[in-house]
Amino acid sequence: EAGVTQFPSHSVIEKGQTVTLRCDPISGHDNLYWYRRVMGKEIKFLLHFVKESKQDESGMPNNRFLAERTGGTYSTLKVQPAELEDSGVYFCASSGRTGSLSGYTFGSGTRLTVV
Amino acid sequence: GQQLNQSPQSMFIQEGEDVSMNCTSSSIFNTWLWYKQDPGEGPVLLIALYKAGELTSNGRLTAQFGITRKDSFLNISASIPSDVGIYFCAGQNYGGSQGNLIFGKGTKLSVKP
Image 1 (spheres, rainbow over the protein chains, first blue to last red):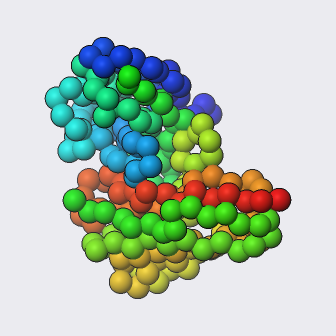
Image 2: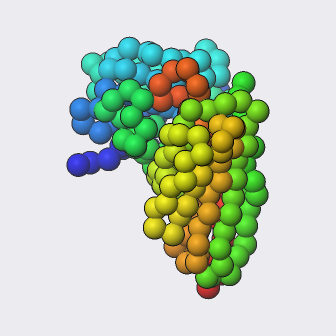
């Protein structure tokens, strides 16, 4: 089966611009998660979708970040306007069952650089 | 919020040597996980631990879930060049949202042939 796909793999944008990251989970996986790793720091949870609903968005840094999962399939994460501190690697993960950690598959990530 | 202290931050070892890394927390977790990230890829699950005191092996990897539920270690025996990468520990919030993982900062492993 295809894994979790993220697009783009890299993005370099100027401060103040808008960027949209996309994640395609494994087909049939209801749970979709977004995480972020800032250089040299830990991977931090951003939010969790169950189908199209936001189950937990406690990790979203501020209102410049907007995540959507229309139709419960792919998800987008928009940053508008981007700031320098938003640079990092954004990971998406999906799982079939809530709490199923063995089936928690990460994508390769999108490396975002804000200059 | 909850934090995991992972050490060491980086390791440079000779091929064939054994490796040990660990994570500690001031909070209890009911699940501990160890992931490996290769360059340009996402984290891949190596070992999952679900019971306090549990010792689990996966090939040359061995991990243990501390009795207090506040720590875990990962050992790699007889390292090989493909072990190079960043190793992350992660814990699941006890009673928190299912799937919300707390990660350590990672241990970067370099193996010299």
